[in-house]
Amino acid sequence: MNFVNSQLFKDVQLAEVFADSKMFADAVPNLSWQSACELYQLVGPLKGDELREFVMSNFLFADQSIPTAKLDTTSVKQYILDLWPHLHRNADTDLASSLMPLQFDYIVPGGRFQEIYYWDSYFTALGLEDIGDLATIEAMVNNFIDLQERNGCIPNGNRVYYSSRSQPPVLALMIAMLWDAKYKQEADLTWLANAVKALEAEYQFWMQGCNDLSSETPAIRRVVKMPNKAILNRYWDSAATPRPESLKEDLHDAEGLTTEQQQSYFQHIRAACESGWDFSSRWLCDHNDLKSIETTNIIPVDLNSLLYNLEHTLSRFYRLLGKEQKSQSIAELATLRLDAINTYCWNSEAGVYRDYNIRLNQQSSVDSMAMAVPLFVGAASVQQAQQVKQKLMNEFLKPGGLVTTLCSTSQQWDSPNGWAPLQWFAVKGLTEYGFVSEAQAIIKNWLSMIEMRFAEDKCLLEKYNVCELVSRAGGGEYTVQQGFGWTNGVTSRFYKLLDDSL
Image 1 (cartoon, rainbow, N blue to C red):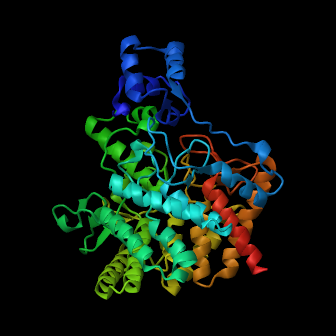
Image 2 (image 1 turned 120 degrees about the horizontal axis):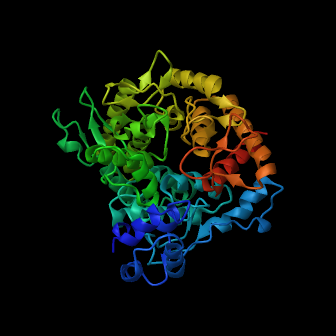
Image 3 (image 1 turned 90 degrees about the vertical axis):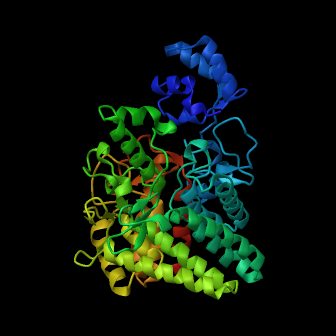
């Protein structure tokens, strides 16, 4: 049953039985959601302690704690090694909760995030590769391929309430990682052909509707026909309803809006969640007002860079499979995308890549770490890379690493916060263009901050205040989470890169 539309679900979420709305969205019913809802119809509606007692009597909740006593809290390196088994999950047998069961093992980020997350898993995989655990990386890739076949896209995470949106397309990065680390040596073209089939499916998901674009209908789902007829992509979500896992927050924020405005607001919010940057001034008309969100009006430079990488990866793999015509065709599409990125997202005067607003027909004013992704995927010219490098080192680099944007707001994907995945995009991108000393400066600032915070926190966290190291990161809809998958993976890789350079 669709439990998110049940009276029980709405009553619990709106009564704030739990401080974090995601808690009940992830609850495991003793029997089934249908049984719990039918029982609630007989005894409800309930309020206060009676409602909480009903919930606690009919549902179980996953243990989100991390057994700190079993972890080494004197060494960051050892802590990361000790933590992987605690973030590891076996293939799912739970069929009663909101989970979309996975057939293979996987890694969760930690804290409130007790499911696999799409783009998180690539950064987690960096740390797994460092310890030679290719089996878990492959298991996660197999889960994503299976989810895509079952769901029509690789969802944000394996929860039913995430099923209508994806996340930044990193499957090509994970498949390339496995190919280079394992299957290339074996020349296993059967494995590669199956991997390419999965990448083709993801590409079709992102490009769905592109043949129906016109001057009258310039935007369909995730594709947009730009003024010069080029096609670029945006984040989107087919649903225009409140997020079940943030029901009370979304309904509260949408108060006072008309029905049409509410639907637009919910869709923009969901699209921002697909971006992984939930939330940021990148998506806001007024940087201090979440109600001004307009995600689907934004052409993100990082999304289009990752799709450029997907196109290039497909071209490379088609060639290895002997499909020269397909290789050439998709390479031409990559060239067209690169031209469009340079036309709409490159600002030569400022020396930065910026998102493009299709409502205003102009570039965003927000400078963000998204500008590092064209370097990461090799889409920048040498001159562009040089200018982005200067911007990153002069304005984004802080004592604890690179700050997310130059806008200081209450949103978690803004200043003063820094996030591990964005550090990796920049370090890898700068290194590829020969800016090794700059990349090492970022690594050293990040690791110095991590070790300082670790001495106090005794754990690793999902995000950090990279501007004021004595302060914990804040902002967003929930408290900073402990674990943490992508922080572990990127930090592990940074230690390895630093050791290799000595």
